[in-house]
Image (cartoon, rainbow, N blue to C red; front, side, top):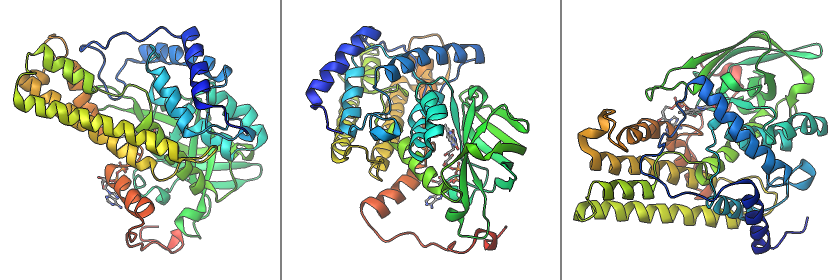
Length: 409
Ligand SMILES: Cc1cc2nc3c(=O)[nH]c(=O)nc-3n(C[C@H](O)[C@H](O)[C@H](O)COP(=O)(O)OP(=O)(O)OC[C@H]3O[C@@H](n4cnc5c(N)ncnc54)[C@H](O)[C@@H]3O)c2cc1C
């Protein structure tokens, strides 16, 4: 597909955005600085509806799934177009998105488009990209987080169905999702990565039980999901049997790209800290000035890295390991931002006194550690950068034997 000129395309995007959104207002220091959502269920449902109106308009205008190849239902554009879209969007009041919207559109929708059959693309991927259906990510398990290829949830073939038994954990938004993209072990007698298959599981299927997990921030945005004898028809298998690891790693690369470069507001940013320092009359303090300058430089570096990674990728490419760089920089910046705000506020950060901007920063501080874990921990991103970007010697691997021969199986 021929590439539209980036500047001309950017102008079209800006004009379209002006037809569906209001221009951005100045950020107020007292805004929502939560990294993850902590809303009561009815408010979360209302927010999801607001997000869906915008996502549908975006899909209908042809601005969703920008980097997917045309024959997979995408626009066949480059990551530079994604970055340009995000830049243009930041000049408007975009409805605050949620983890589930992001997982549905930017992870599951993309992966089902890439790995699904033409029928699955028509029936499911399109509905995910348009948020007509919402999908969560049923990957992590109690014994398979960083070592995701160790999943123990089993799927065994039974006629035209697969029967799934096991447990998932940390599933963001499962209580609101229509489907889950699930990884299950279908062949324990090959190395662990080779025996995994991906499925779309209807979250209302008999045998699926969702139990919310209460977080230290007070919310319960993620869940445990138990699967007991869940029957899933073979037509909901995504990719070939045994191709689940490729589906997983592609989905995770989309996740790192989304977390590292996305526009969705996650916690406080440099302008919020600056506003806080001004409101406390601390901008004359040389130590505070140094901390603010450090945050400013890191913010600029992160933006430049997002831009560089975007420019390096070709049209229709799956995201590469460089996405780990931007995810790592984003989580590091989030933690540092919280630390500077905490030092500025001192003891005031620990209580909801009603004073503007205090409890908002508590929400940031309580959410930032989770961001260092979600989508692959900081340490795992460093391993990926070391091995796949810098080509350093890999970690020792002691598990190149059939999964069933690993200790504990
Ligand atoms: C807010 C949030 C939302 C999430 N949402 C989802 C979701 O929707 N769906 C889903 O499937 N999962 C989700 N997760 C789970 C997330 O993917 C895992 O928490 C993450 O992959 C880490 O796995 P773990 O928690 O099992 O930690 P572990 O893998 O047990 O790691 C423990 C510690 O050991 C370190 N470590 C492990 N292996 C290595 C290694 N090889 N080298 C160096 N250090 C290592 C880790 O960095 C970490 O510090 C979410 C997590 C969070 C925090």
